[in-house]
Image (cartoon, rainbow, N blue to C red; front, side):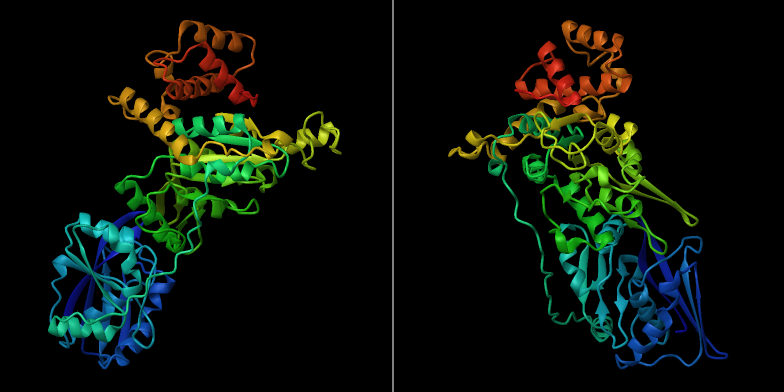
Length: 506
């Protein structure tokens, strides 16, 4: 046989496209041609495949070899096509029997000695293959841990090309030394460890109930980071579909060493304030990878020292905050990653960080303080539903013996509040209070008459923008759900307004 075909998966974001790898061996001057819009890493596959075949006991054909990856219009990238090209070459030479390519895909990078190395994006690729009716997949052994969430596709792991040859020739799957990756998963932190901060804890709980974005303001050392790190512990667990989607994003980014594949805990991502826009929203010159906001999908994106971020980094989050997705456009096309996250910002009240109480310890001028806070742009700040001032704990709070409420207690209220909202929105396309459309807030989901009168007065006195008007209404629904009210009353709306303005809730 001089013509052979295998199949693999090409990823476009989280979407997978089935790719046919065709190999033709013909008479003529020895040569190698690779067709089908390959990238640089794929163009280099020839030497990797040649050495791997030689070091696996097979022969490289001393003829003209043509490899075609179709569909030809689709850009292919990465080294994951090494193994299917090698298998197709061996089939074309008649060394192995024909693979049942209609029901099996192959992926993996080859080392020069024939070892099969792990690749990024195996999980979303196999999810796509599963949806296309593929029944089994030959994958690198080190990627097997990623496949635990699959139900209708059988992964077959191998660590060397010679083992794949034995499987294709004899149907025998050799024993593979499966080394599970060492996960550096941080221990979950409990809200009971936070001393005092009654108002900030209330703001945190309301943010978790309704999916509202949050800004913590306060001097260094008061607990802003501690509060933010504990938000995932009070959020409801992810369902199986959400957990698989989050794991797929981490698989593409090569970040599964930091998260278990089947973890139900919402992710917590905290990029440093010196990060770039590309690292924040995703991108790249050669291969497009998801950024921090996509890694925080269905979880929390926390940015400490927010005013210290480089110009444009925070503003790059405005589009994901509105749409819940990140669209990255390149010459080859547009890739869309999900980015539905809860944004939590933390900032000092001034450059020196000591503006607290009457501000007697602060050495900053009023101009410096104003310029410092203006580093967070108005359009982004307008998208923050809740602003909470985190004060220095009192001596009485620091010496308290009894701990505060635990994450489990708060999470129970959050889950109850979300269940109430889900029941209210069962006929609608959204499930969280923060997603209520503005048109529905003016009609179906209005607050009580007294509460609406209060909001209209704030509008008339120009103390509230149109966007702020809707944000306050959405937050008031979360407060009402937390308090067991069927409709937001005057107290709920006033508290929501205080949260937006950064006033304390006692």
